[in-house]
Length: 135
Image (tube, rainbow, N blue to C red; front, side, top):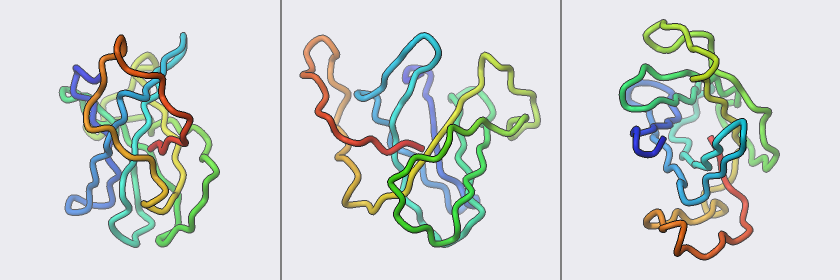
């Protein structure tokens, strides 16, 4: 996914789009899914938010984010959310290509630091136990 140019963004409008910083060094995989932690800043007080997810060559999958315009901090994760049935270009999403997201709201100083680069898994020390922020 990283090599395919995977993108994740928190979107309110064309002028209010915040691309998420994906934490590839903290990604995990199992037989069913790959989970990649990420974070994005809320830039405005607008309740009409969406998360978009796509690789560089596909139309984005869209996920509604039902938060109030000025959400309060809530460290509880949302339920996993599946995308709308169609992509932005109105093409159908095949089940094997479907993404899922969940999120929570934290104050920015509480989010974990973003690694400067993705370490080589063969040489990287084990990750420290810290909460991840996911979109």
